[in-house]
Length: 316
Image (tube, helix red, strand yellow):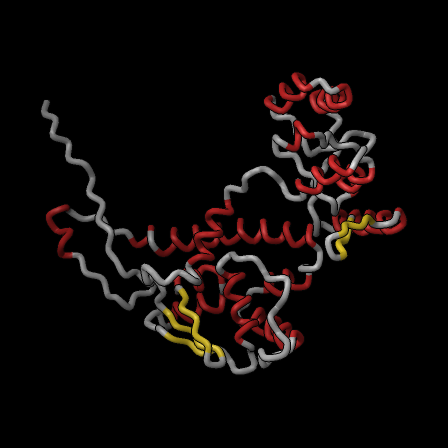
């Protein structure tokens, strides 16, 4: 692992690295952290490692194309982190034992800086565009899509019932009982900064490194953290508070975010299936214009989508 002071990167001492490795092993054994570099004794991976040691780029490329796991490790705890593999999506995570070994054994600063530049996976995460779209709804003014206004200590949040209902058990029950609700006031004990962070989390955004307290804000960091704990319980989103507690551990935090985005997609997909698809109406085409739907409905629908089946004009 490494820390940064000013613009200077410093590496941990050997004893600190060993202690970090022990903690990482405990987290993996307890199921809190996934193993990014699993042991791989397969013939394909062994040949890949041998090719890397020899500099046989042709064989490396063949094994990569064949689907060998380029982020695995061999029986000597080495993973094939060289330029060719980095360009094909391998991880050089400095918060892992294997990644730190690469930095320690880099032959010069140019190679070391290259490895550091691959701190995050080069592979594309297909969930990121989805999460970015959902998060954008918090700040996008045009077109207007919000259907509920939430106020917190004088600050207003323009939100979306379907996201709140899909992501928060509290809102799911509240809006199911009163779907016509268009406004809601947060208890005064919750700082607006805390509610804003909670909403960003619900909208699949990243948790900020700083909570936003201090002089001129009206709240201390401690006040905001207490507010986050309260709103997490109030909205019945326990994973929010767990993410706050783990925010100092970059690797664990990144893993939690990936899992939360996957969970969020599943929640929204389930909500769509249970509330939109389940309420579809199949009728004769000549009666489609007669369909009416109350605007204050339990699924918050504000538009009726008509999809006609094609007419078979063929004749025998």
